Amino acid sequence: MKKSGKDIWRGLQPAAVAALSTRDYRAPALAKRLAGGGVEAGQIVSANRRSLVAIWIPGVEIFARAIHVQRQRGLFGELARRDEGVLGSLKFWPKQWATARMFANTAKGFHVHPPFVPEGEDPAKWLRRRFSGRANVASNYEAEQWDVMFFVQGRVEMILRDVREGFRSRIMHFFIDGDNHRGPNNVAVVIPPGVAHAVRVEGSEDAIMVYGTSTNFEPAFEGRIASDVESALLPESWRSFLAE
Image 1 (cartoon, rainbow, N blue to C red):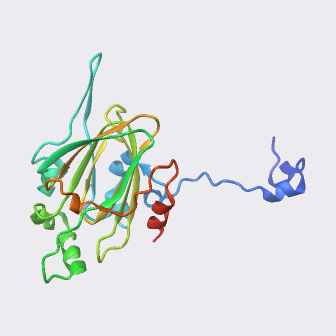
Image 2 (image 1 turned 30 degrees about the horizontal axis):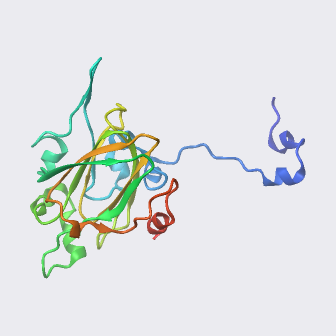
Image 3 (image 1 turned 120 degrees about the vertical axis):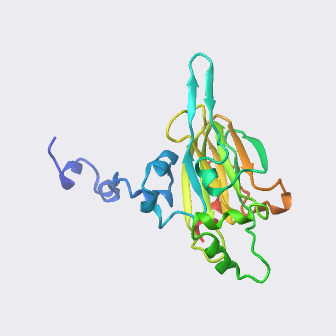
């Protein structure tokens, strides 16, 4: 069939033809998708970091994990090795480790941990100095909560938004696979204080997370921004928050 243009719709009523539109199947640039509808975590890890600099949230790290399949037995997934890899370069080793199980069709967040700002310092200037490069962030792990998250079961959607004083409100939206779904989306995520984060379970399988924090758990530092998350679609409170 070689018809093109309006001719192919001659058999439809005029009102129906007028209502038609053509979907654009071309994929937007990775940076645009990362800040919008979301991307597979493996695409972030394999991308040239410089191509994402305009959208990357300073202090956030996403790194690949090694998952070793043991035929007829199960699998073995590495979390992190002290003083090696991304955590080694950040000089970040958690003070507390914990686990969380998220039932299918549930979500957590948005919530955020307060960044440390010394008395007498301008918050925006101080934070911009600290996050101008990795070398500046290591000195305050005892004074504020950093997270490193690993997913050992299920599939999740994660959304990050920078809400630190003096920073643009960058958004990073991506999808992570647990160890039982071995592939390029097996990643870990480092989240600095001042970056709001939310996690939602995908599909009908529970998600199990292991995470480390730079400080011991303190409920007073768990600042909740939007908690109406018990629906399949992104709740209105999330959409309003992201649109600000």
